[in-house]
Length: 121
Image (cartoon, rainbow, N blue to C red; front, side, top):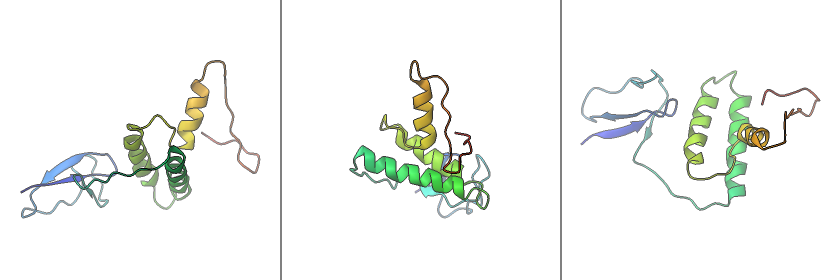
């Protein structure tokens, strides 16, 4: 019986034989992060607002720690992209700003941090 492992970095699914040679890294991107069991899924019922709170906090956290964990934003945004396939809601501040910029007649949008500096969103 084979196991299907999901790389959280590149979203690649790899089939491995549990009795064979252990997988040392993702064959797609060479990430050495711990993969997920691709078949171990869960279904949740949340309000859109609850989902947005969780995902926006997660993306903000990933951005805040990227100097110590450079792969954090890649992993979080990969998960958000997957979650985004099931909802039309913006699940990150980046997506929220992109949606705002795409609205007819809005024009350029500038986002400021609390200290008055401009963000790169």
